[in-house]
Amino acid sequence: MESRSIAWAVVAMSAVAAAGCGPSRLTQLRVQAASDYQCRAVETRPVAAYVEYVSGCGRSDVYWFEGAQDRWVSIGERAAMELPCDRVGIQVGVLDTRTYIAQGCGQRVVYKALPYVGLVIESRTAMAP
Figure 1 (tube, helix red, strand yellow):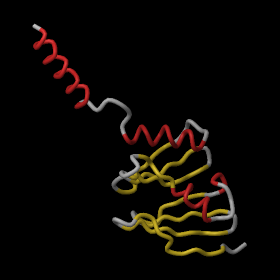
Figure 2 (spheres, one colour):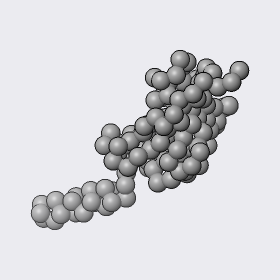
Figure 3 (tube, helix red, strand yellow):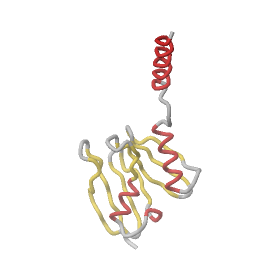
Figure 4 (cartoon, helix red, strand yellow):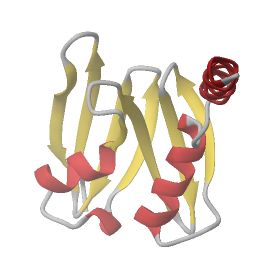
């Protein structure tokens, strides 16, 4: 009888694991973006595989899923390290499925997503006043 109970417990746990308990990656992104923006009204739109454009409450950003870290990474967060302003002052847009633009504080950075490399700066320019 005990072996049947153990067998049923294994079957039940396998079914729960197969159902994918926990939030999906897109749900994970929406929760993260709502927290990042401090805004519940965020919308997502797919750009490419594992890349999402996120907007809401007057802000926009692009996130890509970093599998090695098992988390969504924000281009705006990256740009905040390279532009002279905080993340709130940066707008992020999509030029094509692998090219993204971040603008803020009078500067513009264009990023290119390269397979097996990650995000690299393609150009950096000052914007005309």
